[in-house]
Length: 191
Image 1 (cartoon, helix red, strand yellow):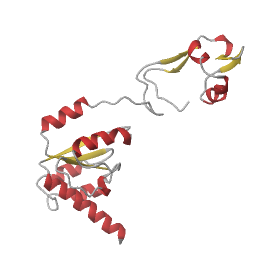
Image 2 (tube, helix red, strand yellow):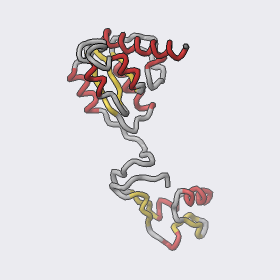
Image 3 (cartoon, helix red, strand yellow):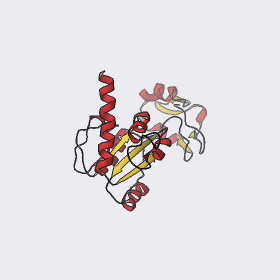
């Protein structure tokens, strides 16, 4: 019973956000990290406080600047309506049909040009994750490895680096000058 109440509340929150805002956007994302997305959420939430939640389910503020809903695609489809007969507002069933995968819904009063400009300028540098495609080749030089303490040799070996201790310094096995960590266009692994 509690689970049903939670779902009903979520659907009501989505519908309240639709009523409180003039525009609705569907956006997709990949490799999103919560610490970066928090800034996006705050930008569209305006003066409301951040609850550090990836879905707005715990946010009771109605905020007129905007609202973002992530995940729970099935519940979003129910809130919007899956067909013309049960849609919450005109043509929302069309949006509901394309709600799948890593997507979010943004409800806002900001102009289309402001929203599009914000997302067009949005680019966040971050460390790559395993499974990502390397945007460029990266190599470590002998000099870069030598600056690390000898105590890191075991960790380097676990990461697949062919290193040894030579004359009290970390160096590549066999006197190598450099080691290619990743190659442009290839998938990154945890090693």
